Image (cartoon, rainbow, N blue to C red; front, side, top):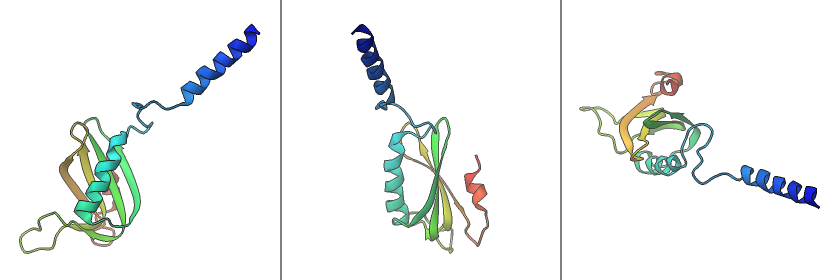
Length: 125
């Protein structure tokens, strides 16, 4: 009887260990709040383009998100350089502050003309 109670207690403790905590972060260091600002930025800044791939790069004070789109995407909220087109590219790298969850203002476009600058330039740490 006592061994059965100990076995049940052990199973209960093991099952509780498998339940994720509400404050636990994913193993890759990307916090759960990052998904909401990503979606808002895609909708507001780029008009919800088709995302082919998405990568997250964690830093101590910011989260970098790199989106690869199906086709060239134009930044709708960016101001163009004098007498030039608005910034555009097939791969975009943006940064979010960990403290405020807002865009830091850093935005880099890759694969603007063919494969230049290359995707690796946006994925580089």
